[in-house]
Amino acid sequence: MIWPARVTALPFTVAMLGIASYSMMDAVMKALAIALGAYNAMLWRTVFALVIAASLFVWRRKRWPDRSILRLHVRRGIIMSMMAFLFFYGLTYLPMAEAIGLSFVAPLIALYLAAAMLSERIVGRAIFASLLGFAGALVVVAGKLGGVYDDDVGKGIGAILLSAMLYAYNLILQRQQALVAEPIEIAFFQSATVLCAYLLFAPALAVIPDYDLLPDLFFAGVLGIISMLLMSWAYARAQSRMLIAAEYTAFVWAALFGWLVFAEEVTVTTLTGTALIVIGCLIAARQQPDHVDHVESTAV
Image (tube, rainbow, N blue to C red; front, top):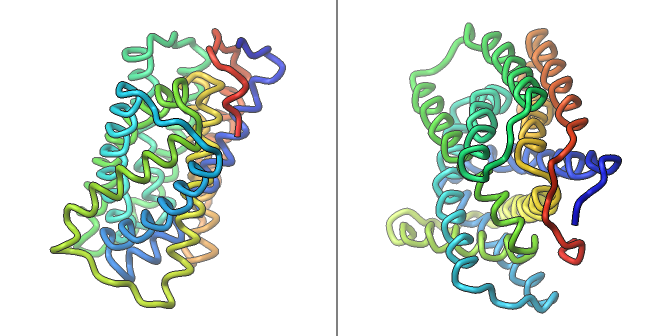
């Protein structure tokens, strides 16, 4: 169906809630990655996520997708497995806000990938909103680059930038998935694919986590599923060019959770950059979509 202009802000709002859930998971996962290493934190979080997603999939009695849709699920799952590992590896060496700031190259790349791969029209307002948000991220990162770093910071920056490249492609696959599959189906097959990818390395890398880390791993799994469901719902109802600026709100949450959990300082440049990001998001939320082919029955 074609969504009227008066409700186009709803998918944008839902996408921002999905980003908030994912950012909260980032904070939990940073602590877990420091304790367990990035691989084991991702492995065991994905185990819990798959149990939750599989329970929802069976409870809602979802049908098995056809082969073409299944290939899309597997493709995005493989991209997600690499992207997530690189991000959480980099996060162990960088403050949350700075890592998110570096990752903001992804939405900018995805804006143009959406035009190339999904034939979405890029209008001036979309470009301006994206560039304004990206400028805000640059302000924040510039304010942090003068700080003192350890010898491993290069690893962290490299991992975050590689993850961002994969995340740009992931945003396009997310849009393609959302148009052909329901959120619960996406969450189930993505979790299953990611877990299968990580299990390939389990004989050499896997360790059993301490009992006191299990609640945090479960909580991270829950947050990941919530984020996937919300983002899938939003991307089924709005074009990628409308939602890309929502990705920039991740910095706001990263700065907040970094301060609350890890006592990471929020500076004047952080606040200035955040203001630019929010303005860009508000501009993007007021865009008029061309149209979105979507049937309301897919709502969760």
